[in-house]
Length: 250
Image 1 (cartoon, helix red, strand yellow):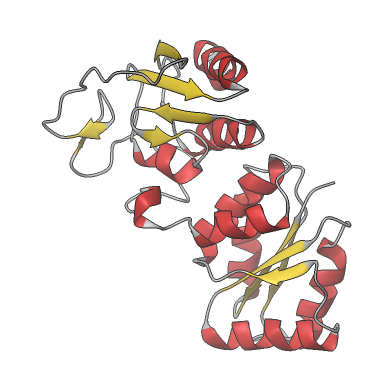
Image 2 (spheres, one colour):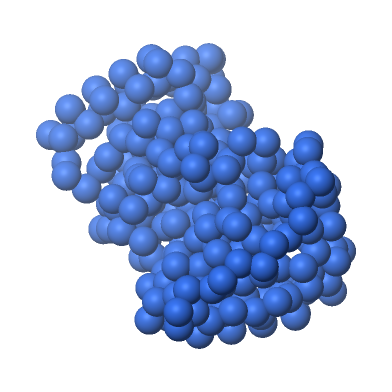
C-alpha cells in the first residue's frame, strides 16, 4: 500500500487526465480524480471530493491536489466534514507537476509528509523543473538553451569536479532512443527516492523526476553519477543497470 492521491479539478476531463498521466509513472499508487459538478458541468462537487478521499485512503494517507481557488475551498470543506483527519493533507502545488512528483514519491514508498513535499517542491527553482515537459512521455529533445549531447546549458562543458570522499561514481552513456524522458526519469527518481543516498546525475538530484527530465539528456548523453551515503553503491548499481538495459526500451 502507498499514499493515495486525489485530483480535484473544475473539469472532470482534466482531473481524469492528470490522474491518467501520473499513473503512467506510478502504477501501484491509487489516484482518484474528482472533477466537475455532480451533473457533469464545470465546477467542483463536495460529494465527489469526499467520495474520492474515501476511495484513495488505503491506510497510508492521502494527498489532495487542486487546480483553481474554489477547488481548494471545496477540498477544505470536505476535510472539515470529515473532521480534519490527520492522514489527509492538502498540497499547495501545481496540479500537473505536483501530481506527477507526488505519484513518483508515493510509488517509492515515501510517507505522507514526503509525498506532500514532493508535490509542493515540483516547480521550486532549486528543483530545476522550469521548462520540463511534465506530459512528456517522449521528451527526446533538450530544453531551450541546453545541449542535448551532454544535458548541460548550451556552451557549457562538463567539468571534472572532485567527488566527495567515499563517493561511488560512474560514467554511463544513454543508449535508449529517446534518452532520459519522463518514464525513465520517474523510474530512477522513484527507486532512488526509496534509498538512503545523495545522488547527483549531471548536476541534477537523482531523486527528483523533474530535475532529471530537465537535463534534456538524449541518446548518447554521458551521465556523470556521484553518490554518497549508506545506499550509494546500490544506487549507482541501479542507475547502471537501468541505463545499460536502455530502461527496457530496446
